[in-house]
Amino acid sequence: MARDGGSNELASERTDLAEDRTVLANERTFAGWMRTGLAAVGIGLGFNALFGKMEPTWLPKAIATCFIISGMAIFYLAERNACSVLQRLDTHSVQPLRRMNLRLVATLMGIGSAVLLGGMWFLL
Figure 1 (tube, rainbow, N blue to C red):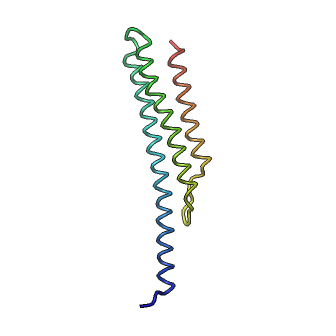
Figure 2 (figure 1 turned 90 degrees about the horizontal axis):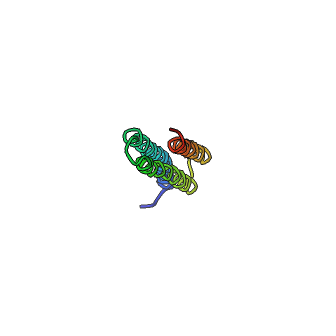
Figure 3 (figure 1 turned 180 degrees about the vertical axis):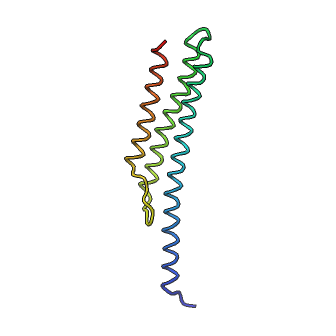
């Protein structure tokens, strides 16, 4: 049985759609990691708020700092991984987020976390 050009075209279209789905899955994964980073920052702030009066006073701040820095690391790693995946893939019928937008979101989350961390240590 001879292969016709139609089956090759159909296979190519399925491959293109699979690549588009992978790009969209990458964006959902990035969003999930950003939520995880925000959760780590929130746990750190919550820990400091609940146990801030504990003695010695630096201990709850140090524990909260570990969570906040973990959140900042998650933001960085999420951006790095998402941009790496986008660089390797070509889109066909979907418009992916630009890598610059991913970097902007991760950078703003990181800066916000650093400001919160500074405020936690330097405010009463």
